[in-house]
Length: 128
Image 1 (tube, one colour):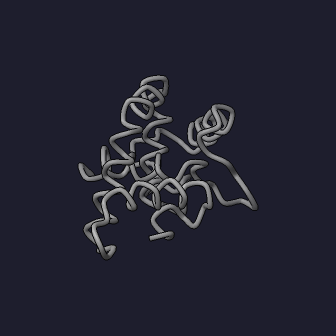
Image 2: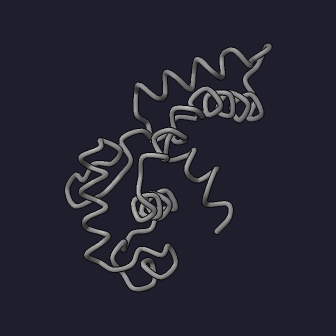
């Protein structure tokens, strides 16, 4: 269960609480999925508003990050996610860092909120 939220203690607690509300006697995989679904629903409005304030390039970069693309500036990733150019990837990445949506640590770019990453995947990446 903890890997769903990348072992981030705050989000593990949130997910555990949501799952706890689903459990009858024994925690099942279905309880975990239902808890996660309710947690995503709880944040739906917040995440939608967050996305509304982003440019198309920034949102496309989030889609690529959520899909665990490693080479964000590669021609393949730029084409697949319509990221325009490697320069626009860098500008979008910097803007998302400033908005505190992503962070770059030891050359690795990741979501600050792993639940937002799940929401991006559920909302957008099923279409890719």
